[in-house]
Amino acid sequence: MIRIFLAAMLLAIAVPVVGAQEWGTLKGRVVWAGGDAPAVEKVKVDKDQDHCLSKGDIASEKYVVNSKNKGVRWVFVWLVDPKDAKAKIPVHPSLAEPSQKEVVIDQPCCKFEPHVLGLREGQILVAKNSSPVPHNVNLVSVGKNPSKNEIVPPGRAVKVEGWVAAVPPTLVKCDIHPWMMGYVRVFSHPYFAVTDEDGNFEMKNAPAGSWNLVVWQEETGWVTGDRKGVPVTIAAGENKPLSIDLKPAK
Image (spheres, rainbow, N blue to C red):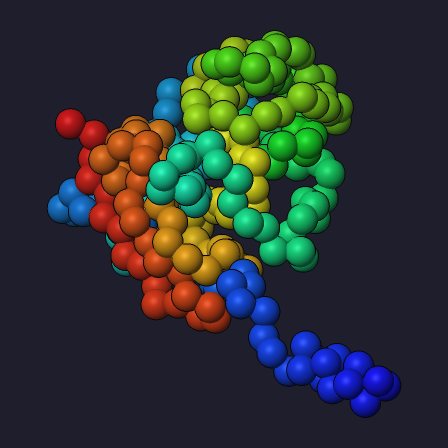
């Protein structure tokens, strides 16, 4: 009887679990496809100029394109289930909880840094003002996410809770300095990213399988045509990088 039991145990260990979830790394790059990179536009700074212009002119961030490689910065990308955008996506155990409870957006020199950022449900947005002049944080949300407008004195911060996953982004404004704008998006899983200065993004430990990749940029809108995104297949391990064209808004 003992021998039979041990044999059964060894067999159970040797046989792999059928259908076990595998994980891969998805990389890609968003590239400007509108001809020459757009010229850098300066914003009109008509308030607190001594401070706001202390590091030079402030450029518009509607389109931030690297002139050397045409990579587009500040583009949101995220995964959705191709059959149901609201369906849950498998999450790797190492990503079950956010690595940090608070996510910071600052206003050190009259622009929001970072310009756009993503949150997971349950995280807290900390709106800081590390500059020597007053700012305000005006959050304009559609639906259940917070909408509030608070003055943030120099050296202070405002913590905003109650974020839930949503399709529309939250607009972040400073009414004292009206050129200042940014965006916050909220997700129910960790498989989202914002492109860097070269247009690159990466999602580690993403679920292997067939998904849709949604791409959004503040001026162009839905880069891939609509909010359903485009099909992507993630294999276990490292995946071939994607290349996504971004054209200017019509």
